[in-house]
Structure formats: structure tokens, C-alpha cells
Amino acid sequence: MLKWFEKQVPKIVLAPSFIAILLFVYGFIVWTGWVSLTRSRLLPKYDIVGFIQYERLFDSPRWDTAMSNLFIFGVLFIVISMFLGLLIAILLDQKIRVEGVLRTIYLYPMALSLIVTGTAWKWILNPGLGIESVVQGWGFENFKFDWLINPDYAIYTVVIAGVWQASGFVMALFLAGLRSVDDEVIKAARVDGIPTTRIYSAIILPSMAPIFLSAFIVLAHLAIKSFDLVIALTGGGPGYATDLPATYMYALAFSRGDIGQAASSAMVMMMVVFAIVVPYLYSELRAKND
Amino acid sequence: MTDFSTNQTTRKQGRAGQIALRWGLYLILCLFALYYLMPLFVMLTTSLKSLEEIRTGSLLSLPRNITFDAWSTAWSKACTGIQCEGLRPYFWNSLLLSVPAVMISTLLGALNGYVIAQWKFKGSNLIFSLMLFGCFIPFQVVLLPMARVLGILNMAGTIPGLIFVHVVYGIGFTTLFFRNYYVTIPQELVKAAKVDGAGFVRIFWSIFLPLSLPIIVVTVIWQFTQIWNDFLFGVSFSQAGTQPVTVALNNIVNSTTGVKEYNVDMAAAIIAAMPTLLVYVVAGKYFIRGLTAGSVKG
Image 1: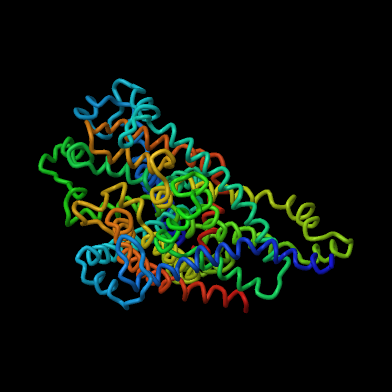
Image 2 (image 1 turned 30 degrees about the vertical axis):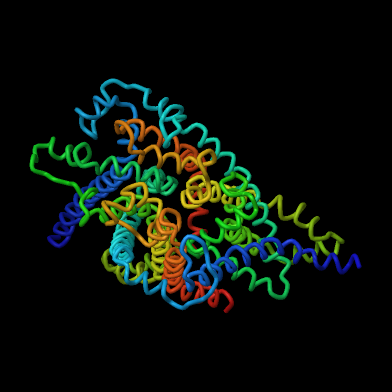
């Protein structure tokens, strides 16, 4: 009896966490998925009626804005962060004497809350008192920089702040990747007189493909979940010009009291995440088992 | 001979070019450093200026008269809606909720990681995969049902409720960290200990725990940063008295009543950022390790 109990201890230890994940992750996904197929408004209803919530969602101009914003923000945020991160990583990899200090400076934004980042950039980009007046003070009196309150450009301010926060982190990923490239190969290439730019483009960067992939996954994931930054920086405005799916979902759930719409938008977000992440995780897990 | 001398001049030119390149490199790196530091500089200087100076001066100039008024207002007088008690009560809320949440989720992660790495049973790998996938979901998908469950459990708008939420959605990460660490410890160690008659708890307590300090530090820092900086759960599941500091900061900055006090906003932002910034400065190495380890899965 005691022996049997002894054998069950690992399962008993794992059980509470397993049940919690099963219930609060997978159970909740099922709940949200179910409710997204009903006519729920202020209170959840449980009679499935089909895809009317999704039809409403795709008909909504606000959701349309949110999705195209996600696309604009996502693409720019990922591309610029990757480019900047890679550039700084390569520059830092040239046996720089104060590397430690510089690295610390480049990476500290990652320790900040996105609310803090949003607050800081909201002030810096303030039309009137921020960057605009600084440049005007330098003599360019006609300089205008009102992106924060311009519905056509406000989404780019989210990109500016997002890149500032995340690019240092991408730099750290790439730097670790650069350091893991086999030194012997690079030395051999140097001896053969191959120029440094060629060494990077033909030897080092191709061998870092997995790092590009994981940087992409992390950034894409951050972009889709972006909520805090928009709330702090623009509040989704002007109007709903900078709405993202995450802010749309929150507004519908907690201010508008439209549970059906909130649930269906959350499900769409999850599908977007899974479309990106599942193939990646699958290949990762399979590679590990081989 | 001629060959030799031309060779030498090109080499000299080469060296001068090298030095110029080197200086250029340092210059670019310093410009990047300025770019990353600029917002912190602006926050700090703005928080030390008077409103008058902010309106008349430049964003990038140093304060002429340093005043700490904005800091004391941000800490104990600024309005977060109808209440005007500053950030102080919310700062304590954040501390009160992150300390237990970090401790519980780290402990559970250690135990789970220990089981998954060293006490495999049929299905344990599946459980691990399920936990891993759980790390990736956008939390929007659990907000509505969680709000209802917290209501049913009578924990809606309470700090224990927030602790519960952070523990549940932190387990995936902490388990991953400990599992990846414990998997590097040879299984022979456990086998030998078993032969000596040590059980599950004994082996964990006297072999694994003493080896775990680095990964505990990484996990605690990761969890603390995540929970302290969280906004989504805080804004969804708290009410007037129980909000964490990030929510209070956002309320101060985006409150529409009265004169816009930019210096108070900046002081409040720095106060809210202080704990995680401090952790980063003191234990940056472990912070980065957690970041890169966390990124392997997302």
C-alpha cells in the first residue's frame, strides 16, 4: 500500500497544476469558443446559433481597422526590431571594449512595463511640447510632428515605442547567436582572405536561421498581444484609429458589455497566434524527440 | 623592393582606415546608446522641472531649478480617478500581490519541472506539451470566463483573486524553466539515491534543491517582472481599492480632469518602473538568461 502510494507521488504532485491548466486554459478556451457561437450580449447565453458573432465582427468597421492596424504594426514592428537588433548585435560583436555597459543600456527597456514606455513616449511625442518643439527650437520653425493625434499616422507612434522597447531584446538574441557560430570556420575564412561582409552574409547569418525564426515568433507574439502599449500611448485613439484586436476585445467585453463580440474577437486572435506558433512548436518538439 | 614599399604604404593606409572605422563604430554604438537612454533622460528631467519650466523650456534641456514636488505629488497626492492618494497604495498592492504570486508559482514550477524531468510517467510529456501551449495563448481568450469564475469564487476585485490568476498563468513558464534545468542533471544521480532508499521528497530536498539556486533566481526575476509589469489582468480583475501600480499609473496619466501635470506623470512612471529597473540593474545577467530561455518558447 505504502509502496503503491510512493509510486503515485509524482503524479499527485503534478496533478493540481495539470488540472489548473486543463480547466483555466483549455476549459476556458472551450467556454469562449462556445459563447462566440451564441447570441450573448450583456450576459452569456448558451444556445448555439452559428457564426453570427463572426459575421458581425467581420462587418464591423472598427474590427476592420483593428485588424489592418495589427498588420501595419506587426509588420513594421517585427521588421524594424529585427533589423535594428541584428545591426546592433553585429556592431557589438567587433570586440568592443565597453560591451557590457552598452548591452545593459540597449536592453533596459525590456525591464519596463509597457505602460511606463507608453507614458514616456506619449510625452516625448506630445505635439506642442515634445520633439516637435525641440526641432522647431533648432530653427526649423515649420516642422510639424503631430502623429500622436493624427488618425492616419497615430499607429506609427505605437511602432516607434514598440521598437524602442523590444529591439534591445532582439539584439541580445542575435548576439548570443553570433557568439555560438563556430570560430574555426570564421578563422579559416579570414585566412582565405574572404572579406568580412561576405563572411557575415554567406557564413554567419545563414547559420543563425533558427535565431531569426525564434526572434520572429517572439515579436509576432508580442505584437498580437499588444494591449498595454496602445492603452497608455493613444488609448486606441484618436477615435479608434489605433485600435488593435486586443483593445477591441477589451472594449467590447468590459465597456460595451457585448460578450458575444468579445468572445469571437478573442477566438480570432487565438487562431492568428496559433497559425504562427503551432508549426513552430511542432517542429521544435519534433526536433527534440529525434 | 618596389613591391615591398607599395605593400607597406597600403598597409599604412589600411591601418589608418582601420582606426577611422573603429572610431566610426564607437560613434554609432554611442548614438544607439543615446537613443535608448533618451526617454529615461526625458522622464527624469521632466519629473524634476516645474510645470512653468516645462511649458517654456525644451524637452531635452536640464532642469534649471530642481524640484521634487512632482515626486511627492505622484507618490501621495496625484488623482487616479476620484481618489487622490497618489501611487503609494497601489504600489503596495503590487508588492502585496507579486510577492506571494512569485513564490507560489516558482515553487509549483520547481516541483512540476522535477517530476517532468526526472520522474517521467506515461503521459507526463503530453502534460508538459499542454502546459507549453498554454504559455502561448493570448490571454484575451480567458478574460471573460475568468471574470465569471472569480465572481463565483467571491474573489472578484480582490488581491487574492489576482494572485490566483497570476499563479495559474505563470505555472507554464516556471515549469518550463525548471524542467529545462533539471533535465541536464544526470538520471544516474536519482537512480543511485533511490538505491540508497531515498524517496521523491528526500531526493528533491537534499539533491535538487541545493543545485537550483541559479534557476530559482532566473525564475523569480522573470515572474516578478511579468507580474509587476502586468496590466491586462490588473485592469480586468481589480476594482478601485485593489488596483496594481500599472493600472494606477495609467489612470493618473489619462485622467482628464484638471491641468495636465506632465512632471507628475513622469515621476509616477519612474516610481512604477523602479522595482523592475532595480532588479535589472542588480541582476541583469539572470534577467537576460530568463529572457532568452523564455524566448525559446515565446
